[in-house]
Image (tube, rainbow, N blue to C red; front, top):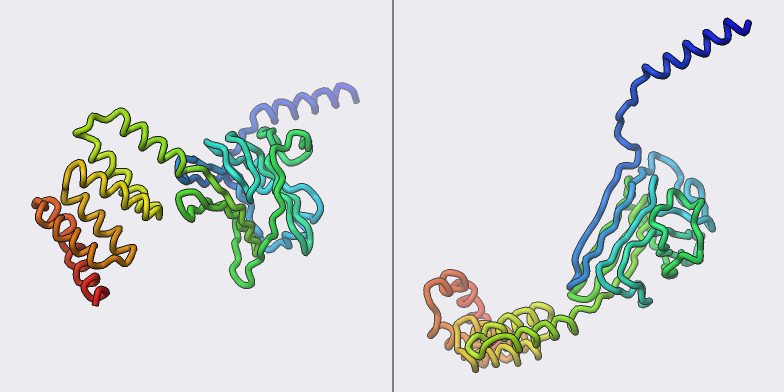
Length: 286
């Protein structure tokens, strides 16, 4: 009996030794989302499970039980600068993202310093960097089969991270500091630029401020650019700013100055837009 058992065991070991590891796709594949808002790079890495006709909330993902907000290894989110999440400060860094779902009330979203978590077994609350309470939303009809994260920019300083799965839509508001740093960068550039080149820094600053919605400061910088060196680009930007402020006569006058200074490349690039704007501003002026 002992000899027979020994040979059976030896045969089993030899069989296992010759077995091949099968390389198959993961049921919950790796995924990521990334976006830069202002100066802040934001990224989330996760594994994306599917619904597969299962009942998710309260069943597969129980209420009042910590959830890894994904599958396999920890879902992680990283910020390159300090941010505010739902109005609360969070230092730059990389965090494990966990969620505490609840029925008919707010859910708690947790940013934890242990990014090596697999599941929630080794979770320690003292390693939390931030906890925020978010009210979940559930779509009536739209179904998200595979869990998905998105990072959405709303403006130069605000956005949100969206977790979608099944009917769930969980929005995390994100605020970053952009304008103060941008103004500091502009002032530093002006301090380091010779007088003859300041017009271009002012023009770049005005273009950025106008794009970001800071219209009054944009007008100030555009005028400074023109004062240092009148250019078609400077007058055209000033025209657009005046048009945005509904100062249509001033917009038309600035456009005329731009056309006087315009060279062929300006006309090629902006010609149709200038004509359309002139027509619209004349109509609005009346």
